Length: 62
Length: 137
Image (cartoon, rainbow over all chains, first blue to last red; front, side, top):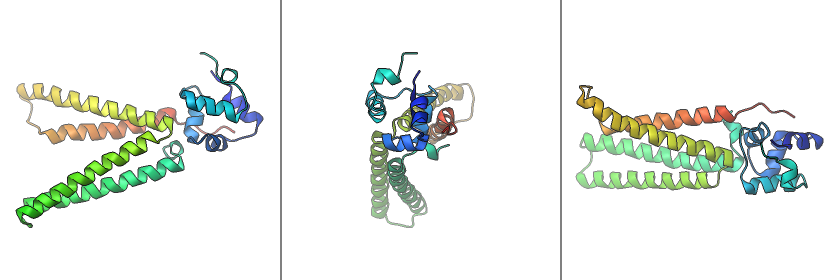
């Protein structure tokens, strides 16, 4: 469970834009948003930094 | 589907791996044909063999570099594919040895290698498909 799609939509970023900011592929962003893939801790920290949030505000246990 | 899984850095690193791989295969084929047809002296055959193995080792080095620096989902797909390929190859090799004892036609070690290679390619395809998704803005 995560709020990645909501946070991205609030900033009107495409998946490709977010992927570029994170230095990952668009497929990775899509897979995280859809819950098919759990990011590593460094990537989760990078996501939190991009959205200026805490990790626990973006990701919640399933 | 596949291109969305690669960052520009991954594409660059994979292209380097592919170039080493193609080079290694070309030298391997040239060495095989030249040695079999006795077009070159024994020393030349050894030189081509060493060159071929060296290029294969450089391919492995390039692949490991690609893998270590790859996008984490891409790395997961590749590692899953490698595990499946190794597993299926081993099962095929050992299982078929028993089948041979029961009367199945004899195969050589290259056939297991083919199973590994095909499984590696198929597992990557399924992996990319599994994580594929259309962009939602």
